[in-house]
Amino acid sequence: MKQTKFKSKSRPARFWPTLGFAALAGMRSMSAPALLSHYLSRNPSWLLLNSPLRLLQKPLVASGFRLAAAGEMVMDKLPSTPNRIAPPALVGRLLSGALVGAALYKSREGNTATGAIVGGLGAVVATFVSYALRMGISKQANWPVAAVGVGEDALVLSSGAALLKAQPSHR
Image (cartoon, rainbow, N blue to C red; front, top):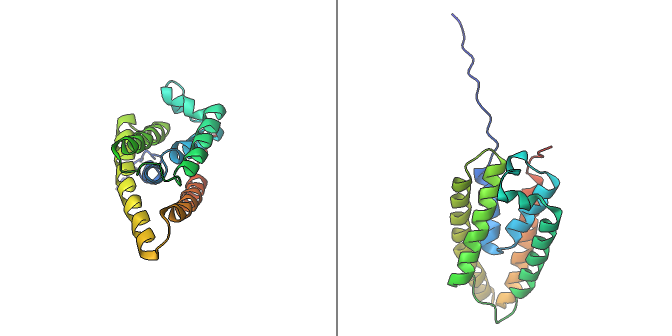
């Protein structure tokens, strides 16, 4: 009896990492593109070369996103900053999640539109979940919302670092 070997085309993981970056976008909209751009600038993907998403691989773009992410962490603590679930902020988080999802999927041989949908929807869900957690912790612990926000910043940074560490090298 002859055995037939089936070759399985190994597809790089993209769904779960996209949800991870989307969750970061839901908590801090600029952190997800900053982290992904940082990763892509050090591990460029040839699959992005003929795409507008290739800009995420530029070190200058990565630096710009890092600066924007740092500014967002500061602005988040100001009382005049609108809630993340306010329509303009929510749209920004959706777009951030869609951007990282599209880039991650494209860089891993996936469909850009699918990545954008997964990233965008993941960011919206994470926005509402993280908002509810932040408000709930603040109320239960009787802590200022800004103080809980500092803890959220630490969670974003540590989760982002772990997510980056888990990503494969394209080189």
